[in-house]
Length: 153
Image 1 (cartoon, rainbow, N blue to C red):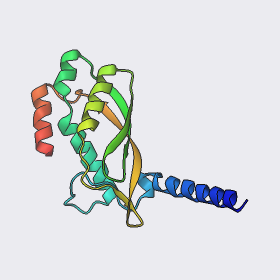
Image 2: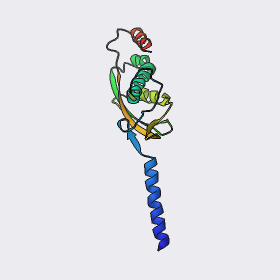
Image 3: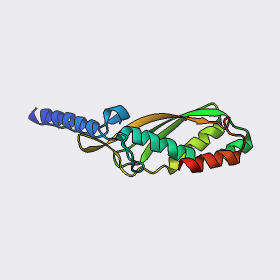
Image 4: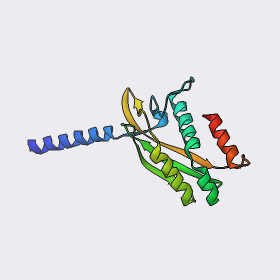
């Protein structure tokens, strides 16, 4: 009897410990967002993460391949996790266009996180969703688009 109570308590505590370790937070719930690269301005870590993520996407999108295929304009919603070691996991893309999905998956497969998010000074996992708009409407040509990207970096 004592052995079964001990076993049950041990299993319950072990399960609670494992659940606490694998908890995934939203960006709003963490103290510090993951770091893609350091911000030089006075943005909060969360705003910096969003800015650096948007800059990474804009700078690394293979828009020419999509233009050649005539897959523009389009939109994709990308949900991903940054685990407690800073690795990108569980990338899910929602879009009607399989080529935009493939490009979004490629972008996130190459994304490098320097430091994971923290909460109460502990490294934690986050889940985040970002919309990506694949659009060239404001540009007259691919060259004009390229100049705009270079000017932003």
